Length: 170
Image (cartoon, rainbow, N blue to C red; front, side):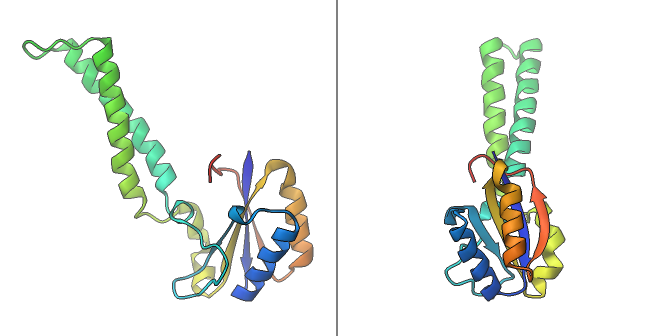
């Protein structure tokens, strides 16, 4: 189980120093993500991916659930009110449910990649001013340790909190 920690660094150089210190604190490079406004070169820092920048995860989960519900409803309706020579049983309802979930996942993921991450909207002003958002995924038992470590080493970076909704496979 991981938690995502957020800091705002004043510039790219400060973000680089934070990244280096996180490596020294034994946080793997793949668990660090950096976000800046378009046009700012992050250099060797790992820019946040589409999964971090967009609402694709939320959209995929919602689309799958809604699609499964609608598929199950369609299957049930066809079982209750059959079309001539078409009988739907429990297996058919399950197939409609699975198809609905798959289609809902596909369609909503396409939409989700175009929507900005709703959690990151609170940082829009700071990012527009040229600050760098540092996102670090750490195990639950290391949250306080990493937070205190960075606050002590980088007073110029503003602590912005913890997001408890980090997926198991970032």
